[in-house]
Image 1 (cartoon, rainbow, N blue to C red):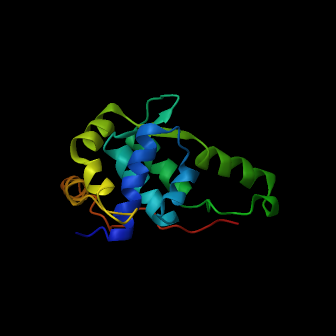
Image 2 (image 1 turned 135 degrees about the vertical axis):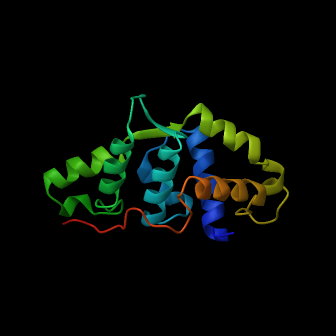
Length: 157
């Protein structure tokens, strides 16, 4: 398993949030993944067409690339009081857009995620290996193996 236990637990939480709650990208690091991992999971889920913007709008591969490239430039933890008004506006545009799972993404989540595995564990961060293994396989099949960095984060000032 390339995805380590911390990342696996966090990614499960990301799927749960995207399936059940109106979510903004800025909320995903609260699941336990860092800025780099947030950008990478968003890219992979959009590319697989498992995630969409809300309200729905048609997006192309080029749109996904540009969106993720900009997420990698605007630090989700930036102190907006110390930034310019233009930075603040673009930060909000990229990090405060609602996202959720598509029906295809939900189908994957509900097919492979077994809540009993997590609920029966003593640890709140228990990992469902079947879910993570299938997810990793799909990433690999689509030439997006976990660990491959598509958008190195680098904050603009």
